Length: 558
Ligand code: CTP
Ligand code: MG
Image (cartoon, rainbow, N blue to C red; front, side):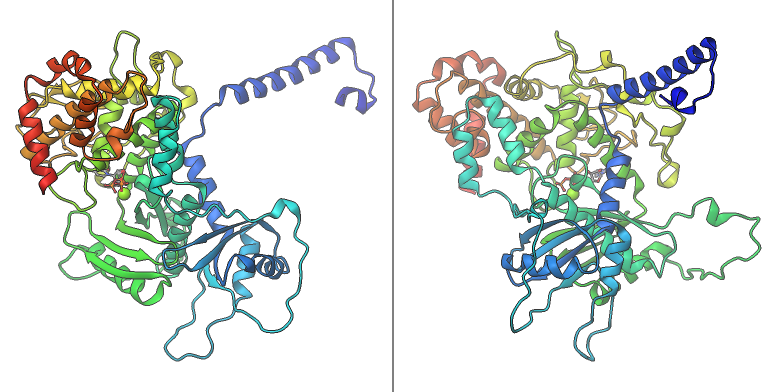
Protein backbone atom coordinates (compact mmCIF):
# COMPACT_ATOMS: atom_id res chain seq x y z
CA UNK A 1 0.00 0.00 0.00
CA UNK A 2 2.79 2.44 0.86
CA UNK A 3 4.50 1.70 -2.46
CA UNK A 4 1.32 2.50 -4.36
CA UNK A 5 0.62 5.62 -2.28
CA UNK A 6 3.99 7.17 -3.02
CA UNK A 7 3.06 7.23 -6.70
CA UNK A 8 6.71 6.81 -7.69
CA UNK A 9 7.58 4.57 -10.61
CA UNK A 10 9.17 1.50 -8.95
CA UNK A 11 10.94 -1.22 -10.80
CA UNK A 12 9.64 -4.79 -10.40
CA UNK A 13 12.74 -5.69 -8.35
CA UNK A 14 12.21 -2.75 -5.99
CA UNK A 15 8.60 -3.72 -5.46
CA UNK A 16 9.51 -7.33 -4.68
CA UNK A 17 12.30 -6.31 -2.34
CA UNK A 18 10.15 -3.78 -0.43
CA UNK A 19 7.18 -6.15 -0.21
CA UNK A 20 9.38 -8.95 1.11
CA UNK A 21 10.74 -6.66 3.79
CA UNK A 22 7.22 -5.58 4.80
CA UNK A 23 6.05 -9.21 4.86
CA UNK A 24 9.03 -10.23 6.99
CA UNK A 25 8.37 -7.46 9.49
CA UNK A 26 4.71 -8.31 9.65
CA UNK A 27 5.19 -12.04 10.06
CA UNK A 28 7.90 -11.50 12.68
CA UNK A 29 5.57 -9.38 14.77
CA UNK A 30 2.71 -11.78 14.32
CA UNK A 31 4.77 -14.80 15.35
CA UNK A 32 6.27 -13.09 18.37
CA UNK A 33 2.77 -12.06 19.48
CA UNK A 34 1.53 -15.61 19.20
CA UNK A 35 4.51 -17.12 20.98
CA UNK A 36 4.25 -14.59 23.87
CA UNK A 37 1.89 -16.48 26.09
CA UNK A 38 3.22 -15.31 29.44
CA UNK A 39 3.44 -11.84 30.95
CA UNK A 40 6.48 -11.18 33.10
CA UNK A 41 6.19 -10.33 36.80
CA UNK A 42 7.81 -6.93 36.16
CA UNK A 43 5.16 -6.14 33.54
CA UNK A 44 2.34 -7.01 35.94
CA UNK A 45 3.91 -5.01 38.79
CA UNK A 46 4.51 -1.98 36.52
CA UNK A 47 0.89 -2.12 35.37
CA UNK A 48 -0.41 -2.35 38.97
CA UNK A 49 1.83 0.48 40.18
CA UNK A 50 0.71 2.72 37.33
CA UNK A 51 -2.93 1.84 38.08
CA UNK A 52 -2.40 2.81 41.75
CA UNK A 53 -0.86 6.13 40.72
CA UNK A 54 -3.99 6.86 38.67
CA UNK A 55 -6.35 5.91 41.53
CA UNK A 56 -7.82 7.38 44.71
CA UNK A 57 -9.85 5.82 47.52
CA UNK A 58 -12.78 7.90 48.76
CA UNK A 59 -14.86 7.22 51.86
CA UNK A 60 -18.55 7.84 51.10
CA UNK A 61 -21.87 7.67 52.92
CA UNK A 62 -23.22 4.69 51.04
CA UNK A 63 -23.37 2.99 47.65
CA UNK A 64 -25.90 5.64 46.68
CA UNK A 65 -23.11 8.25 46.66
CA UNK A 66 -21.82 6.77 43.42
CA UNK A 67 -23.74 9.07 41.09
CA UNK A 68 -22.77 12.22 42.96
CA UNK A 69 -19.12 11.22 43.38
CA UNK A 70 -18.84 10.27 39.74
CA UNK A 71 -20.33 13.58 38.66
CA UNK A 72 -18.12 15.57 41.02
CA UNK A 73 -14.86 13.87 39.97
CA UNK A 74 -15.60 13.94 36.26
CA UNK A 75 -15.56 17.73 36.47
CA UNK A 76 -11.82 17.47 37.09
CA UNK A 77 -10.83 14.29 35.26
CA UNK A 78 -12.06 11.39 33.17
CA UNK A 79 -12.91 8.31 35.17
CA UNK A 80 -11.77 4.83 34.07
CA UNK A 81 -13.81 2.88 36.62
CA UNK A 82 -15.19 2.87 40.17
CA UNK A 83 -15.09 -0.05 42.61
CA UNK A 84 -17.19 -0.04 45.76
CA UNK A 85 -16.38 -1.92 48.99
CA UNK A 86 -17.16 -1.91 52.70
CA UNK A 87 -14.57 -2.40 55.44
CA UNK A 88 -15.15 -4.39 58.63
CA UNK A 89 -16.38 -1.21 60.34
CA UNK A 90 -19.27 -1.15 57.83
CA UNK A 91 -17.88 2.04 56.28
CA UNK A 92 -18.31 2.52 52.53
CA UNK A 93 -15.43 3.31 50.19
CA UNK A 94 -15.00 3.82 46.46
CA UNK A 95 -11.76 3.23 44.62
CA UNK A 96 -11.75 5.51 41.57
CA UNK A 97 -9.34 4.92 38.73
CA UNK A 98 -8.75 7.92 36.46
CA UNK A 99 -7.45 7.83 32.90
CA UNK A 100 -4.03 9.27 33.75
CA UNK A 101 -1.83 9.93 36.77
CA UNK A 102 -1.89 13.64 35.92
CA UNK A 103 -5.67 13.66 36.23
CA UNK A 104 -5.64 11.93 39.61
CA UNK A 105 -3.08 14.52 40.78
CA UNK A 106 -5.42 17.25 39.58
CA UNK A 107 -8.19 15.79 41.74
CA UNK A 108 -5.88 15.52 44.77
CA UNK A 109 -4.87 19.17 44.39
CA UNK A 110 -8.51 20.21 44.20
CA UNK A 111 -9.31 18.67 47.62
CA UNK A 112 -9.69 20.60 50.84
CA UNK A 113 -8.36 19.85 54.30
CA UNK A 114 -10.28 19.43 57.52
CA UNK A 115 -12.04 22.50 58.94
CA UNK A 116 -9.48 24.59 60.79
CA UNK A 117 -8.65 21.97 63.40
CA UNK A 118 -5.45 22.70 65.35
CA UNK A 119 -4.86 18.98 65.94
CA UNK A 120 -4.79 18.17 62.25
CA UNK A 121 -1.78 18.94 60.05
CA UNK A 122 -2.64 19.17 56.37
CA UNK A 123 -1.49 16.30 54.15
CA UNK A 124 -2.00 15.15 50.56
CA UNK A 125 -2.70 11.44 50.42
CA UNK A 126 -4.65 9.25 47.97
CA UNK A 127 -7.17 8.39 50.74
CA UNK A 128 -10.00 10.96 50.85
CA UNK A 129 -13.55 11.41 52.08
CA UNK A 130 -16.55 12.86 50.29
CA UNK A 131 -18.26 15.64 52.21
CA UNK A 132 -22.06 15.44 52.24
CA UNK A 133 -23.96 18.56 51.17
CA UNK A 134 -27.47 19.59 52.05
CA UNK A 135 -30.09 20.70 49.59
CA UNK A 136 -30.94 19.48 46.12
CA UNK A 137 -28.36 17.19 44.55
CA UNK A 138 -27.22 17.49 40.96
CA UNK A 139 -28.16 14.50 38.81
CA UNK A 140 -25.49 13.21 36.45
CA UNK A 141 -25.82 11.13 33.35
CA UNK A 142 -23.37 8.29 33.77
CA UNK A 143 -22.27 6.42 30.65
CA UNK A 144 -23.23 2.72 30.66
CA UNK A 145 -19.57 1.68 30.47
CA UNK A 146 -18.97 3.38 33.83
CA UNK A 147 -21.10 1.16 36.00
CA UNK A 148 -19.76 0.69 39.50
CA UNK A 149 -18.21 -2.66 40.45
CA UNK A 150 -19.71 -3.72 43.76
CA UNK A 151 -18.06 -7.08 44.27
CA UNK A 152 -16.09 -5.79 47.24
CA UNK A 153 -13.13 -7.72 48.59
CA UNK A 154 -14.47 -9.55 51.62
CA UNK A 155 -13.92 -13.28 52.02
CA UNK A 156 -16.76 -15.44 50.75
CA UNK A 157 -19.19 -16.60 53.43
CA UNK A 158 -17.96 -19.98 54.69
CA UNK A 159 -21.37 -21.70 54.53
CA UNK A 160 -21.87 -20.60 50.91
CA UNK A 161 -18.44 -21.87 49.96
CA UNK A 162 -19.08 -25.26 51.53
CA UNK A 163 -22.46 -25.48 49.81
CA UNK A 164 -20.95 -24.58 46.43
CA UNK A 165 -18.23 -27.17 46.87
CA UNK A 166 -20.77 -29.81 47.89
CA UNK A 167 -22.64 -29.13 44.62
CA UNK A 168 -19.61 -29.57 42.35
CA UNK A 169 -19.49 -32.35 39.78
CA UNK A 170 -16.18 -33.85 40.86
CA UNK A 171 -13.15 -33.28 43.08
CA UNK A 172 -11.16 -31.43 40.39
CA UNK A 173 -14.03 -28.97 40.04
CA UNK A 174 -14.12 -28.56 43.82
CA UNK A 175 -10.41 -27.69 43.90
CA UNK A 176 -10.76 -25.21 41.05
CA UNK A 177 -13.86 -23.67 42.61
CA UNK A 178 -12.16 -23.28 45.97
CA UNK A 179 -9.38 -21.36 44.30
CA UNK A 180 -11.69 -19.19 42.21
CA UNK A 181 -13.91 -18.27 45.17
CA UNK A 182 -11.18 -17.57 47.72
CA UNK A 183 -8.29 -16.07 45.71
CA UNK A 184 -7.50 -12.40 46.23
CA UNK A 185 -9.58 -10.54 43.64
CA UNK A 186 -8.72 -7.56 41.45
CA UNK A 187 -10.01 -5.01 43.99
CA UNK A 188 -8.03 -6.72 46.77
CA UNK A 189 -4.84 -6.34 44.70
CA UNK A 190 -5.65 -2.74 43.74
CA UNK A 191 -6.19 -1.77 47.39
CA UNK A 192 -2.90 -3.38 48.44
CA UNK A 193 -1.06 -1.36 45.80
CA UNK A 194 -2.91 1.76 47.06
CA UNK A 195 -1.67 1.12 50.61
CA UNK A 196 1.89 0.83 49.23
CA UNK A 197 1.41 3.96 47.10
CA UNK A 198 0.13 5.94 50.08
CA UNK A 199 3.32 5.58 52.11
CA UNK A 200 5.50 5.93 49.03
CA UNK A 201 3.83 9.29 48.34
CA UNK A 202 4.08 10.49 51.92
CA UNK A 203 7.75 9.47 52.34
CA UNK A 204 8.83 10.72 48.89
CA UNK A 205 9.87 14.12 50.15
CA UNK A 206 12.08 12.59 52.86
CA UNK A 207 13.87 9.91 50.86
CA UNK A 208 14.97 10.34 47.23
CA UNK A 209 14.13 7.47 44.89
CA UNK A 210 11.92 5.71 47.43
CA UNK A 211 9.90 2.70 46.24
CA UNK A 212 7.44 0.74 48.37
CA UNK A 213 6.73 -2.67 46.82
CA UNK A 214 4.20 -5.26 47.90
CA UNK A 215 5.61 -8.80 48.06
CA UNK A 216 4.55 -12.16 49.54
CA UNK A 217 1.08 -13.60 49.05
CA UNK A 218 -0.45 -10.26 47.95
CA UNK A 219 1.46 -10.50 44.68
CA UNK A 220 2.83 -14.03 44.30
CA UNK A 221 -0.46 -15.44 42.99
CA UNK A 222 -1.09 -17.57 46.11
CA UNK A 223 -2.89 -14.93 48.20
CA UNK A 224 -6.41 -15.38 49.44
CA UNK A 225 -8.98 -12.70 50.23
CA UNK A 226 -7.98 -10.82 53.35
CA UNK A 227 -4.34 -11.95 53.25
CA UNK A 228 -1.71 -9.80 54.96
CA UNK A 229 0.33 -7.31 53.01
CA UNK A 230 4.11 -7.66 53.06
CA UNK A 231 5.79 -4.41 52.01
CA UNK A 232 9.39 -3.59 51.32
CA UNK A 233 10.76 -0.08 51.28
CA UNK A 234 13.85 0.54 49.14
CA UNK A 235 15.84 3.68 48.53
CA UNK A 236 18.29 2.41 45.94
CA UNK A 237 20.47 4.99 44.19
CA UNK A 238 20.42 4.54 40.43
CA UNK A 239 23.39 5.16 38.12
CA UNK A 240 22.19 8.62 37.14
CA UNK A 241 21.97 9.70 40.79
CA UNK A 242 25.57 8.65 41.39
CA UNK A 243 26.96 10.25 38.20
CA UNK A 244 30.40 11.55 39.21
CA UNK A 245 30.56 13.90 36.21
CA UNK A 246 27.93 16.11 37.82
CA UNK A 247 29.54 18.96 39.72
CA UNK A 248 26.67 19.92 41.99
CA UNK A 249 26.22 17.31 44.68
CA UNK A 250 23.55 17.19 47.39
CA UNK A 251 24.55 17.89 50.95
CA UNK A 252 23.29 14.76 52.68
CA UNK A 253 22.96 13.68 56.27
CA UNK A 254 25.09 10.85 57.57
CA UNK A 255 23.41 8.57 60.07
CA UNK A 256 25.56 8.53 63.19
CA UNK A 257 25.51 6.39 66.29
CA UNK A 258 26.24 2.70 66.86
CA UNK A 259 23.03 1.15 65.57
CA UNK A 260 22.40 0.16 61.99
CA UNK A 261 21.17 3.23 60.08
CA UNK A 262 18.09 1.45 58.84
CA UNK A 263 17.07 0.42 62.32
CA UNK A 264 16.94 4.13 63.10
CA UNK A 265 15.16 4.98 59.87
CA UNK A 266 12.61 2.26 60.49
CA UNK A 267 12.04 3.80 63.92
CA UNK A 268 11.23 7.06 62.13
CA UNK A 269 9.00 5.20 59.67
CA UNK A 270 7.08 3.85 62.69
CA UNK A 271 6.67 7.39 64.03
CA UNK A 272 5.56 8.70 60.63
CA UNK A 273 3.02 5.92 60.27
CA UNK A 274 1.55 6.91 63.62
CA UNK A 275 1.64 10.66 63.00
CA UNK A 276 1.24 11.20 59.27
CA UNK A 277 -0.39 8.22 57.54
CA UNK A 278 -4.21 8.35 57.57
CA UNK A 279 -5.72 4.92 58.19
CA UNK A 280 -2.56 3.46 59.78
CA UNK A 281 -3.25 2.17 63.30
CA UNK A 282 -1.81 -0.29 65.83
CA UNK A 283 1.80 0.43 64.80
CA UNK A 284 4.29 -2.07 66.25
CA UNK A 285 8.05 -1.84 65.84
CA UNK A 286 10.06 -5.06 65.72
CA UNK A 287 13.44 -3.51 65.12
CA UNK A 288 15.90 -5.94 66.64
CA UNK A 289 15.08 -8.81 64.30
CA UNK A 290 17.51 -9.71 61.46
CA UNK A 291 15.09 -7.90 59.14
CA UNK A 292 13.63 -4.96 61.13
CA UNK A 293 9.85 -4.77 60.61
CA UNK A 294 7.17 -2.22 61.38
CA UNK A 295 3.71 -3.77 61.57
CA UNK A 296 0.53 -1.77 61.25
CA UNK A 297 -3.13 -2.18 60.44
CA UNK A 298 -4.67 -0.12 57.65
CA UNK A 299 -8.21 0.51 58.81
CA UNK A 300 -9.64 1.97 55.56
CA UNK A 301 -8.76 -1.18 53.64
CA UNK A 302 -8.75 -3.76 56.48
CA UNK A 303 -5.27 -4.87 55.55
CA UNK A 304 -2.61 -5.89 58.09
CA UNK A 305 0.80 -4.73 56.87
CA UNK A 306 4.38 -5.82 57.59
CA UNK A 307 6.79 -3.17 56.35
CA UNK A 308 10.48 -3.95 56.10
CA UNK A 309 13.49 -2.29 54.53
CA UNK A 310 15.58 -3.35 51.54
CA UNK A 311 14.48 -6.99 51.54
CA UNK A 312 14.68 -7.38 47.74
CA UNK A 313 15.29 -11.13 48.05
CA UNK A 314 11.70 -11.38 49.39
CA UNK A 315 10.49 -9.60 46.25
CA UNK A 316 12.51 -11.90 43.95
CA UNK A 317 11.20 -14.90 45.87
CA UNK A 318 7.64 -13.65 45.27
CA UNK A 319 8.51 -13.25 41.59
CA UNK A 320 9.77 -16.83 41.48
CA UNK A 321 6.57 -18.19 43.06
CA UNK A 322 4.49 -16.04 40.73
CA UNK A 323 6.33 -17.40 37.69
CA UNK A 324 5.82 -21.00 38.84
CA UNK A 325 2.12 -20.28 39.40
CA UNK A 326 1.74 -18.78 35.94
CA UNK A 327 3.44 -21.68 34.13
CA UNK A 328 0.59 -24.12 34.63
CA UNK A 329 -3.06 -23.43 35.59
CA UNK A 330 -3.10 -26.32 38.08
CA UNK A 331 -0.37 -24.91 40.36
CA UNK A 332 -2.40 -22.22 42.13
CA UNK A 333 -5.60 -24.22 42.76
CA UNK A 334 -3.58 -27.13 44.11
CA UNK A 335 -1.57 -24.86 46.42
CA UNK A 336 -4.75 -23.16 47.63
CA UNK A 337 -6.34 -26.39 48.69
CA UNK A 338 -3.14 -27.60 50.39
CA UNK A 339 -2.81 -24.29 52.29
CA UNK A 340 -6.45 -24.48 53.30
CA UNK A 341 -6.16 -28.11 54.40
CA UNK A 342 -3.08 -27.25 56.49
CA UNK A 343 -5.00 -24.45 58.17
CA UNK A 344 -8.02 -26.69 58.86
CA UNK A 345 -6.00 -29.44 60.50
CA UNK A 346 -4.01 -26.84 62.47
CA UNK A 347 -0.64 -27.41 60.82
CA UNK A 348 -0.40 -23.68 60.07
CA UNK A 349 -1.38 -20.94 62.45
CA UNK A 350 -1.57 -17.21 61.96
CA UNK A 351 0.89 -16.63 64.81
CA UNK A 352 4.58 -17.38 64.31
CA UNK A 353 5.89 -20.42 66.18
CA UNK A 354 7.38 -23.88 65.88
CA UNK A 355 5.05 -24.86 63.05
CA UNK A 356 5.20 -24.72 59.27
CA UNK A 357 3.94 -21.58 57.50
CA UNK A 358 2.34 -21.02 54.11
CA UNK A 359 5.57 -20.13 52.34
CA UNK A 360 7.44 -23.43 52.95
CA UNK A 361 4.17 -25.28 52.37
CA UNK A 362 4.00 -23.67 48.92
CA UNK A 363 7.56 -24.82 48.24
CA UNK A 364 6.45 -28.35 49.16
CA UNK A 365 3.70 -28.19 46.52
CA UNK A 366 6.11 -26.86 43.87
CA UNK A 367 8.63 -29.56 44.73
CA UNK A 368 5.98 -32.26 44.38
CA UNK A 369 5.00 -30.86 40.96
CA UNK A 370 8.64 -31.05 39.84
CA UNK A 371 8.76 -34.82 40.37
CA UNK A 372 9.21 -36.74 37.16
CA UNK A 373 6.74 -39.58 37.49
CA UNK A 374 6.09 -41.97 34.63
CA UNK A 375 4.22 -39.15 32.82
CA UNK A 376 6.94 -36.52 33.36
CA UNK A 377 6.78 -33.41 35.53
CA UNK A 378 4.37 -30.47 35.79
CA UNK A 379 7.03 -27.87 36.69
CA UNK A 380 10.73 -27.47 35.89
CA UNK A 381 13.39 -27.29 38.60
CA UNK A 382 14.83 -23.90 39.51
CA UNK A 383 18.13 -25.21 38.12
CA UNK A 384 16.45 -25.27 34.70
CA UNK A 385 15.19 -21.68 35.09
CA UNK A 386 18.73 -20.61 36.03
CA UNK A 387 20.16 -22.48 33.05
CA UNK A 388 17.97 -20.54 30.60
CA UNK A 389 18.56 -17.12 32.23
CA UNK A 390 20.09 -14.38 30.07
CA UNK A 391 21.94 -11.16 30.83
CA UNK A 392 18.63 -9.33 31.31
CA UNK A 393 17.72 -11.72 34.14
CA UNK A 394 20.69 -10.94 36.36
CA UNK A 395 19.53 -9.62 39.74
CA UNK A 396 21.53 -9.08 42.89
CA UNK A 397 19.62 -8.62 46.12
CA UNK A 398 20.92 -7.34 49.46
CA UNK A 399 24.34 -8.63 50.48
CA UNK A 400 25.05 -9.52 46.84
CA UNK A 401 22.67 -12.44 46.92
CA UNK A 402 22.41 -13.82 43.40
CA UNK A 403 18.72 -13.99 42.41
CA UNK A 404 19.26 -14.69 38.71
CA UNK A 405 16.76 -16.97 36.95
CA UNK A 406 14.76 -16.84 33.74
CA UNK A 407 12.07 -14.14 33.96
CA UNK A 408 10.41 -14.51 30.57
CA UNK A 409 8.64 -17.88 30.57
CA UNK A 410 8.04 -17.54 26.82
CA UNK A 411 11.71 -18.44 26.41
CA UNK A 412 11.43 -21.67 28.39
CA UNK A 413 11.50 -24.70 26.06
CA UNK A 414 8.14 -26.45 26.28
CA UNK A 415 9.74 -29.88 26.75
CA UNK A 416 11.09 -28.80 30.17
CA UNK A 417 7.67 -28.82 31.86
CA UNK A 418 3.99 -29.68 31.60
CA UNK A 419 4.29 -33.26 30.30
CA UNK A 420 2.20 -34.54 33.20
CA UNK A 421 -1.45 -33.86 32.31
CA UNK A 422 -3.08 -35.37 35.43
CA UNK A 423 -6.20 -33.61 36.70
CA UNK A 424 -6.34 -31.72 40.00
CA UNK A 425 -8.00 -34.59 41.84
CA UNK A 426 -5.20 -36.99 40.91
CA UNK A 427 -2.50 -34.44 41.71
CA UNK A 428 -3.94 -33.71 45.14
CA UNK A 429 -4.10 -37.37 46.06
CA UNK A 430 -0.58 -37.90 44.72
CA UNK A 431 0.64 -34.89 46.71
CA UNK A 432 -0.51 -36.45 49.97
CA UNK A 433 0.76 -39.90 48.99
CA UNK A 434 4.12 -38.45 47.96
CA UNK A 435 4.65 -36.80 51.34
CA UNK A 436 3.17 -39.75 53.22
CA UNK A 437 6.13 -41.74 51.88
CA UNK A 438 8.74 -39.00 51.87
CA UNK A 439 11.90 -39.68 53.87
CA UNK A 440 11.81 -36.57 56.08
CA UNK A 441 14.44 -38.14 58.32
CA UNK A 442 17.27 -38.16 55.77
CA UNK A 443 16.09 -35.99 52.90
CA UNK A 444 15.69 -32.28 52.24
CA UNK A 445 13.23 -30.67 49.84
CA UNK A 446 14.94 -28.54 47.19
CA UNK A 447 13.05 -26.87 44.37
CA UNK A 448 16.48 -25.90 42.98
CA UNK A 449 17.25 -29.52 42.21
CA UNK A 450 13.69 -30.82 41.79
CA UNK A 451 14.77 -34.01 43.56
CA UNK A 452 15.25 -34.79 47.24
CA UNK A 453 18.77 -34.16 48.48
CA UNK A 454 20.63 -35.35 51.56
CA UNK A 455 19.88 -33.30 54.67
CA UNK A 456 22.91 -31.27 55.77
CA UNK A 457 21.88 -31.39 59.45
CA UNK A 458 19.45 -33.13 61.76
CA UNK A 459 16.71 -30.49 61.87
CA UNK A 460 13.34 -32.29 61.65
CA UNK A 461 12.16 -30.57 58.46
CA UNK A 462 14.57 -29.29 55.85
CA UNK A 463 13.30 -27.16 52.95
CA UNK A 464 16.11 -25.44 51.10
CA UNK A 465 15.74 -21.69 50.66
CA UNK A 466 15.69 -21.45 46.84
CA UNK A 467 17.61 -18.15 46.70
CA UNK A 468 19.97 -18.82 49.60
CA UNK A 469 20.65 -22.50 49.44
CA UNK A 470 22.63 -22.69 52.64
CA UNK A 471 19.47 -21.78 54.58
CA UNK A 472 16.51 -23.88 55.64
CA UNK A 473 13.16 -22.01 55.37
CA UNK A 474 11.58 -24.43 57.86
CA UNK A 475 14.28 -24.31 60.50
CA UNK A 476 11.69 -23.18 63.07
CA UNK A 477 9.66 -26.39 62.73
CA UNK A 478 9.92 -28.60 65.81
CA UNK A 479 10.16 -32.38 65.88
CA UNK A 480 6.55 -32.64 67.14
CA UNK A 481 5.23 -30.38 64.39
CA UNK A 482 7.11 -32.33 61.74
CA UNK A 483 5.61 -35.57 63.12
CA UNK A 484 2.18 -33.98 62.95
CA UNK A 485 2.80 -32.97 59.34
CA UNK A 486 3.69 -36.58 58.48
CA UNK A 487 0.62 -37.84 60.27
CA UNK A 488 -1.72 -35.34 58.65
CA UNK A 489 -0.54 -36.02 55.09
CA UNK A 490 -1.21 -39.71 55.71
CA UNK A 491 -4.60 -38.91 57.17
CA UNK A 492 -5.40 -36.74 54.18
CA UNK A 493 -4.27 -39.37 51.64
CA UNK A 494 -6.44 -41.87 53.42
CA UNK A 495 -9.46 -39.59 53.60
CA UNK A 496 -9.26 -38.47 50.00
CA UNK A 497 -8.63 -41.92 48.60
CA UNK A 498 -11.47 -43.34 50.65
CA UNK A 499 -13.81 -40.66 49.34
CA UNK A 500 -13.07 -41.25 45.66
CA UNK A 501 -15.79 -43.82 45.12
CA UNK A 502 -18.08 -41.37 43.35
CA UNK A 503 -20.57 -41.27 46.27
CA UNK A 504 -21.32 -37.73 47.35
CA UNK A 505 -21.80 -38.45 51.01
CA UNK A 506 -21.42 -35.83 53.71
CA UNK A 507 -17.94 -34.29 53.44
CA UNK A 508 -17.15 -35.82 50.04
CA UNK A 509 -14.04 -34.89 48.06
CA UNK A 510 -12.04 -32.02 49.51
CA UNK A 511 -14.78 -31.14 52.00
CA UNK A 512 -13.46 -33.79 54.39
CA UNK A 513 -10.06 -32.06 54.23
CA UNK A 514 -11.04 -28.45 54.57
CA UNK A 515 -14.25 -28.46 56.54
CA UNK A 516 -13.35 -30.05 59.81
CA UNK A 517 -10.73 -31.97 61.74
CA UNK A 518 -9.56 -35.12 59.98
CA UNK A 519 -10.73 -37.59 62.59
CA UNK A 520 -14.34 -36.54 62.15
CA UNK A 521 -13.96 -37.06 58.42
CA UNK A 522 -12.40 -40.43 59.03
CA UNK A 523 -15.20 -41.49 61.32
CA UNK A 524 -17.77 -40.40 58.75
CA UNK A 525 -16.09 -42.44 56.09
CA UNK A 526 -15.97 -45.45 58.33
CA UNK A 527 -19.67 -45.02 59.00
CA UNK A 528 -20.55 -44.97 55.31
CA UNK A 529 -18.74 -48.22 54.72
CA UNK A 530 -15.54 -47.39 52.92
CA UNK A 531 -13.52 -49.77 55.03
CA UNK A 532 -12.44 -51.82 51.98
CA UNK A 533 -10.65 -48.75 50.64
CA UNK A 534 -9.09 -48.04 54.01
CA UNK A 535 -7.56 -51.49 53.93
CA UNK A 536 -6.20 -50.88 50.45
CA UNK A 537 -4.22 -47.85 51.58
CA UNK A 538 -3.29 -49.27 54.95
CA UNK A 539 0.30 -49.94 53.89
CA UNK A 540 0.73 -46.21 53.69
CA UNK A 541 0.41 -45.97 57.41
CA UNK A 542 2.94 -48.51 58.64
CA UNK A 543 0.38 -49.50 61.29
CA UNK A 544 0.30 -46.02 62.73
CA UNK A 545 -3.50 -46.05 63.03
CA UNK A 546 -3.53 -46.09 66.82
CA UNK A 547 -1.05 -43.25 66.93
CA UNK A 548 -3.12 -41.21 64.46
CA UNK A 549 -6.27 -41.69 66.53
CA UNK A 550 -4.49 -40.85 69.79
CA UNK A 551 -2.87 -37.69 68.48
CA UNK A 552 -6.04 -36.49 66.82
CA UNK A 553 -8.10 -37.24 69.91
CA UNK A 554 -5.63 -35.27 72.02
CA UNK A 555 -5.71 -32.33 69.59
CA UNK A 556 -9.48 -32.40 69.40
CA UNK A 557 -9.76 -32.33 73.16
CA UNK A 558 -7.35 -29.37 73.22
N1 CTP B 1 10.20 -15.16 52.38
C1 CTP B 1 11.50 -15.49 52.07
N2 CTP B 1 12.20 -16.33 52.89
C2 CTP B 1 11.64 -16.82 54.02
C3 CTP B 1 10.31 -16.47 54.36
C4 CTP B 1 9.61 -15.63 53.51
O1 CTP B 1 11.99 -15.05 51.04
N3 CTP B 1 12.36 -17.62 54.81
C5 CTP B 1 9.48 -14.25 51.46
C6 CTP B 1 8.62 -15.00 50.46
O2 CTP B 1 8.62 -14.28 49.25
C7 CTP B 1 7.25 -14.95 51.07
C8 CTP B 1 7.30 -13.56 51.71
O3 CTP B 1 8.62 -13.44 52.21
O4 CTP B 1 6.23 -15.10 50.11
C9 CTP B 1 6.31 -13.30 52.80
O5 CTP B 1 6.40 -14.28 53.80
P1 CTP B 1 5.10 -14.76 54.55
O6 CTP B 1 4.25 -13.58 54.87
O7 CTP B 1 5.52 -15.65 55.65
O8 CTP B 1 4.40 -15.70 53.45
P2 CTP B 1 3.30 -15.39 52.37
O9 CTP B 1 3.75 -16.08 51.11
O10 CTP B 1 3.04 -13.93 52.27
O11 CTP B 1 2.02 -16.16 52.91
P3 CTP B 1 0.87 -15.64 53.92
O12 CTP B 1 -0.36 -15.55 53.08
O13 CTP B 1 0.77 -16.70 54.95
O14 CTP B 1 1.31 -14.32 54.49
MG1 MG C 1 2.51 -12.67 53.92
